[in-house]
Length: 360
Image 1: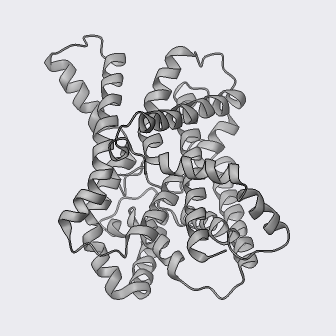
Image 2: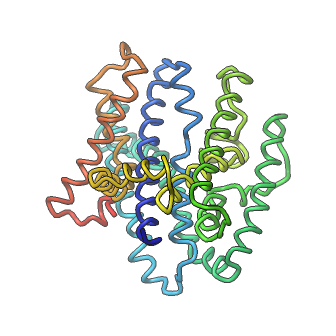
Image 3: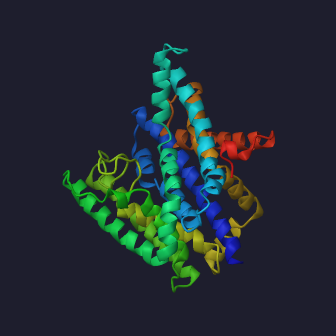
């Protein structure tokens, strides 16, 4: 199989698995907010939060080394395809949240303030994505000049900074030390670019196995840290919102390793593998599975922007109080994912321009 074709397939696969886990985690978070936390739910919520890192790695792979010298073309064909769907779906979600949580809903100052607050505090990943896109013309100049050496330089500083902040988190210490620029979302952008362009002198089977080992070990460390060391009370792996980066993005080295492992598995299993890996590849390349992953991949931005609104409506229809987490989380996740996906396909079918709804 040609490299270009395998590249497209693994990107669709990574997008698909990432958006599925992202929906699962947000559903698990609803149960967490209902004070129904169980061991299974907590592990799901905290140890498989690789969706956003993977999305950012793919963004770095696809967008970081492009030529953005024509800024007008960049804004029309790249930035606005991110901005317009965000404005549409974020506004709809803000209206839903305001109408459901504000008793005096109507055209008044209180409603407008609540709406503005909801609008500004939803979809943290999309807000971050807008900033990343605006920085691409600047970052691309650096990476196109320095290429892999530039990526290596950045990643070395980012890993050092992440380790330092990890140590500070363990002793719960503030610091005037500031390298937060290096441990934001850019760490994943540069990682994606690096993994795509770095030539590794191992065959594809060994690279898949290496990716699996990295994924299993890093995930085990995350779970061990949460359950055995911290007894599910908190996690010290820069998870969730942390005061160093003022972000929900996990920038710990261990999660970078986890995302790297998953990236390697899907990239190289679509290449020249053999044995049981070839059988798995053939399953993944089944026409029905390929069509499904392609469709989900193309819809993933729209799914991200709409699934929380759909989840909000589902919680009004179905009470979570008597719902078992073991069954409730996967069932509600499947319903939410399929509903968002079908919404994208329906809007596309009736002729709504895909650039407005988040369909690629």
